[in-house]
Each structure stands twice: as C-alpha cells, then as structure tokens.
Amino acid sequence: MGNNDKNGRIVVVGSSNTDMVIRVDHLPRPGETIIGHDFITNQGGKGANQAVAVSRMGGNVTFVARLGDDGFGHQTMNLLKHEGIDTNFVLFTEGVATGIAMIPVDSHGENSIIVAGGANALLSADDIDAAGNAIKQAQVLLMQLETPIPTLIHAAQIAHRAGVKVILNPAPFPKDPLPTQLLENVDIITPNETEAQMMSGVEICDEQSIMLAINKIQAIGVQQVIITAGSKGAYTSIDGELVRVEAFPVKAVDTTAAGDTFNGTLCVALCEGAALPDAIRLANKAAAVSVTRLGAWRSIPRREELTNF
Image 1 (tube, rainbow, N blue to C red):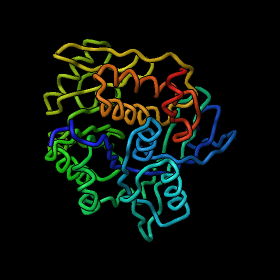
Image 2: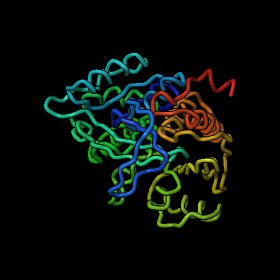
Image 3: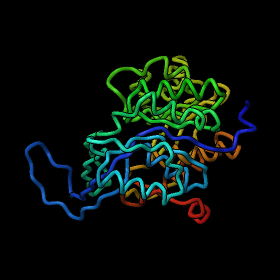
C-alpha cells in the first residue's frame, strides 16, 4: 500500500505531561530561593504537544499514550478530546501518576525543565500492538523520546513495514546513542542543533559543519535529516545540497513547545503533499507564532492564524 492512497491520518506515539510553569527573573542557582511571578498549569509533554499541533493545523490525528488514573490524567483526556484528537489508544494506568513537568521560565524566555515521567514510562509494545491497525493505515507516524525506546522501535517497525512515513523528533536526547533498530526504520529525523551535535559528533558552528552533521546522521541510516536552528531557521539536505529555510523573525517570549509545533505542522504539510522546503517553511511559521506566547498547548497556533502572520 503506497502513501498515495493513505487517508492523511497521522499517528503520534508519545508522552503527555501536565506542566507547572512559573515566571522568574532568572533561573535559580543551586541553593537559591527566588520569588517568582505568575504560576500557570499547562497541558504539555512532547507527544501531546505534537498531537495538538497536528489537530490545530487541520490534520487528522490519533494519539497513543498512557496517563495516570488521577486528576491530571482525567483532565488531560477531556482536553485531548476537546482538541479533536482520536484518544482510542490513550490509556489510564492505575496506581501511577500522570507525567508532570516543573518549568521555571526567565525574563528572556529561557527555561529549565524537570520531568517526572510517571505513566509515560509504562507505554509498552502491547499498547502499540493494540494501536497496530491505526498505525498501519496512517500516512505518517510521529514520535519523540519521552517514552521507552523499545516501545518506539516496535512502533517504527510496524509503520515501516506498512510503508508509513516515520518521523522521529530525537528529544529529549538520551545518554546512550539511539539504537540502529530504531534509526533504520525512521524516514525523517528532526534534531535541533544540540541534538544533531550529539548524534553526529560534529561541533556545529557554521553551514559547513551543519552539512557534515547531516551527512553523518544519514550515514547512520536515516534518509532525511532536518536540523532546526531556532532564529536561524532550519536546514536539510536535498540531492546532496544544503538547503536553509529561513525562520520568521519574532520576539521570543517562551520557547516551550516550539519544536513540537514545528514537528506537528511538518507532518500535516507533508500529508497534504507539500514539497519538503515548503513543509519546513510552514513548520517554521507555526513555530515562530508559538514562541510569542506562554506555555505549551496554549502557545500552539491554529492553521488560520498562519495566513495572517
């Protein structure tokens, strides 16, 4: 079954967290107590962020995840449904907390994040099998690294065998190198500069080093590499040539979920048949809008907002 007769459905396998965000003048140093400003709880987690981005961009999305059977979990489930996301494979886990993240954000929009993964750590190969038909019938499978890697390998193998395009956002980047079993089933990988550096062993300082990093990552077995570089835009290689897709200049308030917005939007544009540079341009635009707003889900734009931007 080729991708042409797929239904444009995107399956996101990944994490869901409740983010607890506090605005601060500067990030606290060890042992320092500082007085913060406003406090917000936000829906977050890379998987959920990406699923929301797909849905708000007009994509057709199924989310595969685990939540704790607690207040945060039930609230998340209601909000996912409200976003128009198919939650048939979002499961409650008894006796385990929903994932949470504690996030101080400073006056420049920089943050530091502590995540307690909770139920995300229990997403299993059996959960993937339960969603197996949805994955096989999708056009794109999108994943990140906040759930167990063996589970992601299983999902990637099922998708790859069915001719489904597999997109991996390698964040947060693990201590160990990513296993070949995962990478050989990935079609597009979307690291940021730091993640690309860790994957390739190349210190990124200019376009030449970016091209070298892309070549090294492709040599590990991933066909297409897109390196996101914040205000510098994004880089990819097409027919062996480095292509830079410029960013949209904005004043960043909070970069939380910018990468997730980029990835979700990229998937929707590719499902619509956009050429890669055009898909990246739309993803850059969506990410630019998201950094002008606080929070994770609440910063992710809807498709119609991009036309006026």
